[in-house]
Image (tube, rainbow, N blue to C red):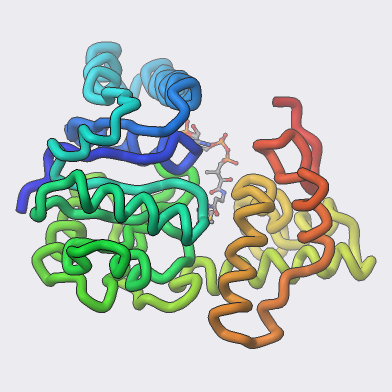
Length: 284
Ligand code: CAA
């Protein structure tokens, strides 16, 4: 099963990174979002990233032009009928994801693989929204996608071995390291990362230390590239809250309860870097 043409759905930071990485690995990418202005903005982000690589001598100008030419923005989801693989990277909302997968199921020929970049929702449940659960799989990229080498690969209950093998192989061809994990809330990455971030928020909430102090402890004491609060802002506080809710709901264990300060920030619209304010303030 050779995957040459990929539709990426979603123009957020994950969709943008996935489109860039797939086009850089010589795949033709159809990039779809309900909002074309968001796709245009994403194309600019990708172009700027590639410019940096050209400036650093890691990419030729011709290669950059060729990568960009392989990404074709489209406002028409029906074009998913022409691809080998669809990678969904929309918001972490089960109702939206299942609605999208149902719609794709009606558009795509039966052999098309449908992957979700969900960071914590059950693959089996998303797959069950389609008539082809054997063709559905989880492909969880890390942010920033062009930099982070990992992809968590998650089978749903019905995912076929052929689909698993094709996605494992493709992940390697995208220059990533695929790791298989089981379909449990938060998989491995977010089951470990998010409680750490949530605990960092609790230490601020309880007055144990300032935001800067917590981040400095983790950066200098544990050699983390970013402090947990800086990382929370980078991921998006709404995403962090939604993952904690999924862990809390999925395991029914109070150790996963989201910190009230996280809820408060999300309610106030302090979503981190993307909104200009989270635990830190950003000039966007
Ligand atoms: N897109 C593409 N490339 C980027 C980038 C972006 N958004 N941000 C940084 N980079 C690249 C830079 O171009 C730079 O590359 P070169 O040095 O080769 O030119 C390199 O990354 C390092 O960047 P900087 O020097 O600007 O900054 P840094 O050294 O502080 O690194 C970082 C930035 C790579 C983001 C680093 O801080 C880091 O690894 N942070 C942790 C990221 C992390 O934990 N990600 C996982 C999040 S969890 C997740 O994604 C799962 C989920 O479901 C929520």
